[in-house]
Image 1 (cartoon, one colour):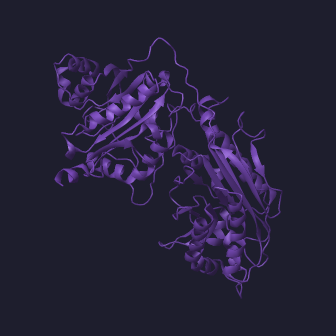
Image 2 (image 1 turned 90 degrees about the horizontal axis):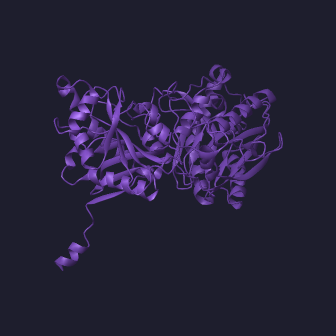
Image 3 (image 1 turned 60 degrees about the vertical axis):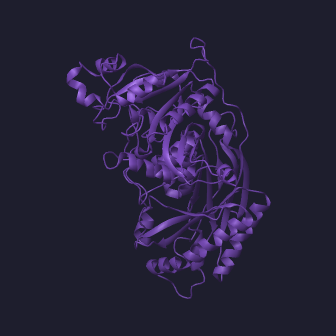
Length: 540
């Protein structure tokens, strides 16, 4: 009996690929390792790392708790072996410079819980990296390694190069570089100012490589991205503004299109910005803008409950346009409620209210924009005017989003074309799909819904795998309809690695970056952390 009980005991230590759902545990590990000495990763940054290269991120769990994490990406040799710093090579820790055709595996994080020494967690994570590089027949592994003993040894050496040479010769002991030398890594130089906030290393890093013994270094590799099929069906609803007599009637109108999209087995359906203003049509008296906001706020719990119900019952992800509401802090926000078919509900506030929204509705802009994890991969939402700010689309794609939904509400052709042209630009510069959904018709007694102009569409990058004009599908102008199209997410992977132009890979990180100064509530600032924990084996 005792032997049988022992056989049923669960393994205490597990090493596996990281998942997006592991982000809270990884963030907690980073906080334990770095403490207040340096800023850690936000959960969004960790999800971005996993989204960009899920095969390259590993975690170690001890009795279910995350106790180790290493992050990796593939890079071209020219980039991996040339001088660089941590922020530049990783795009501030997002891992968005991953190149699916890269011939080197680049490690940019190794983090081990200091309380779990003695079980070789760092060794196990390094072994996973080596196995990955060998399986893919990459040239090897490269990273910038901390030099934690350099600051206290600087008087003994002429500089960082001399320090590394002394460590290699055994004259100085460095726990990080020593560990890596024992694991077959070798220094090829110094990366000056690799991580300025790493005081123990005086900001520098040793440029370390491990060469795959099963690959001929003189034979140039040629990695190709397979033309796979990762099909997603998208439905965009061009919704008619109409007077309704009750909340229930409004829900029935929405549910009709959800039902049709579900019958076509769509994975997503998106509704327009401000589509819930129809709920003001059956008010007995004219409401001031503030009264209207409060009345709409009263509908918010019922609205999200109904959208969530539909998402579950019809097995479809719903991007619920946008709904003006007064949030818990008293501010008035324009919020897109995204209800997924797993039952989860997410909110994305509009970041940039238009001058009209600020003046009449006192709407304030939100402070964070995050990719949303779905069963079809991460997505993003840019509400109307937000599509005209390229920084937001870039942030979503840097977090892994491959589809961006743009609910919009425009009263004129000029306004519509601003959204349309900017959304097409977002699709091209970010090599992603962008989906627009707008209102048509009018509601004479409801402010902001007097007249509408829309031609909803599904936009693509402009390259060989995609639609000839960069338009997968579009609706007829100003008629209520549902427009449906299949898109192949694998085409994006191919285009980013082997397309005629490669906008994401060709960015000049040495010249510019977009720095996001605020994080979601409850998350730490996303300044770059060091390449390893002070108590871990260290380095990349």
